[in-house]
Length: 124
Image 1 (tube, rainbow, N blue to C red):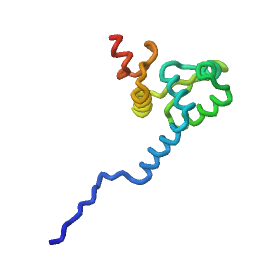
Image 2: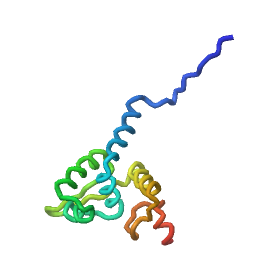
Image 3: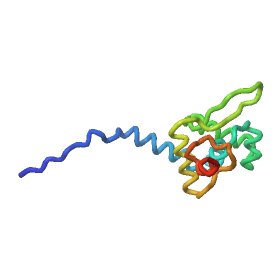
């Protein structure tokens, strides 16, 4: 008797796996992860973000370009200054939680935008 193999119709397309691989490549840089973590908790301009991250402004700007292109962060202009923060998306929240869980971190203050953040649950 010949055994039939069912083809899983829910198998994602190869391009979808490439999207995940691209996200992992983006997060393969510890400076980018640090910048993203900061922006999860504070909206900052490049100058303030550079000071918080302990990096030069050109280096921070370089990483912001990639984070923005990946839609993990958003920006807004106020006069001549541009302010950055994490995007309010499930993907950004997942990355935030992944960092928090991996490093066993507690988010700083009430600035964390994510309801599922451990710090926010403790404050309730």
